[in-house]
Length: 188
Image (cartoon, rainbow, N blue to C red):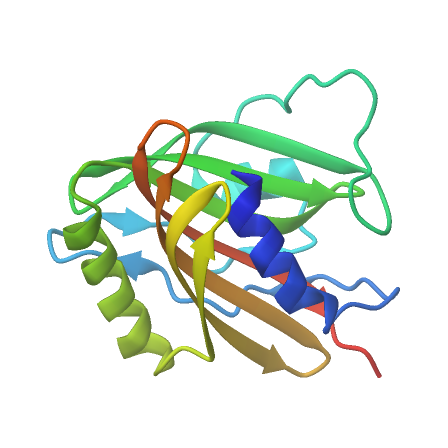
């Protein structure tokens, strides 16, 4: 799950600084043709896990038990919650919410499916309707092969990166579509 997030992190490194202020998520909820919905509207970057659960009206469970706190990036302690997520166009997802120092930093939904083209086209089309043409495109060819598209949004002193990717794991051929978003303060 980290491969796509690393791509998104590269986007966000350009926008990061030491200041941390909660900001509203700059995302619309993604609604599929069949009415399935990825809940994100009204979430606040920097919100606690309890605040996210209350807002979404679901339990995100307990953080992953990895023994010592993880510090894979430049600052703070990272806590990850994973579980079964909502469906989109009838395809079930797995979610991953990441909290840095107790505040929401990223949201990811991953859809393992053999019908990646149909699901990707639906999600990609909806994102283009909401945000226009993507700012970036990358072809993946490391742990996964596939395509990744990203958008950046800046509102005030905060930025949001949005990433969607269609991927196939090289080791076993598993196909999936991943949608993720993360935020960071803007360098000044």
